[in-house]
Length: 385
Image (cartoon, one colour):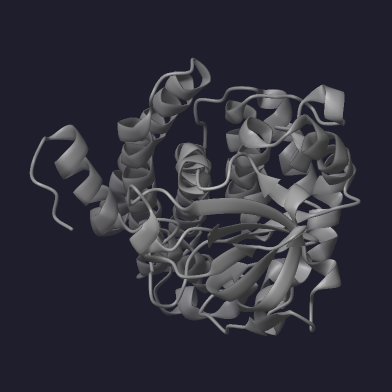
């Protein structure tokens, strides 16, 4: 099946890498709730997780479009970039707002793989997507910040050396504006685990290495503060458009995987003496999923183009996330319906990818919040929350 391709060399290289990790590899990781260390190590060694790090710090210094291609192709090949994608979209906070000293200290080691930046601590049990309501506190002492509180849905904390952490440095009732008083820290968590930092696994319907974090007087050096104290919410927001664009690329990759899988099976599977793909009842949902995917892909490419030109892409990034996640889920539905009962069998791998695709209706931002954003900021309707 042919699609419009760009940067074909990167696509081919990623496909070749992914071919070394079979569906059985991913099924085994899923079954055992195992982190795909071998896959992440291979990506790291070949430099793909350093795509957005400038060359002066040992990275490739490439564009967001290349990062999107990498993540898309991982998913189109049947893998899951959830094990490592955070390193790409959290990188922006350090790149844009970190000090020269912080960049020199951390970026070369992240690029080489000596350090992993895979964990992002924002969400809390009582705040959900209302980031301004978070309560994890960071109190300034003599030469450190004393951090107390809790985070949830912090994926890959057990497999990361560094944690990008958002905490409240000014009590909410003392902040001048509701967006003030939050600060971002780059924390080397290796010295705190099982001491002032406790990590608890959360079992979920897909293998996402998800955890809950508990901070009890965790002493973080002052030099680990990124940017200015109290400006953390702004720093986090500046990276969310890139995050939504990259996650959208993963959704497109999933959609392509489902469509290719369903189309091939529809041609091979024979019932009543003929391929089931000869029936319009089987053809049409797959064809519609393909049309939906291609439309979403064009929106995503437009968002990437605007982003790389330095434009404000709030609307386009949110549209991409909405449409690409919907396209992925539509393709998943068409695929499992095409396979029928076999779609629920582990060996065909459809049920694993089906469960993984469902996540993007909820995370990293839910469909309803995107609709709220479009209603308020694009269509000028009253704020709904």
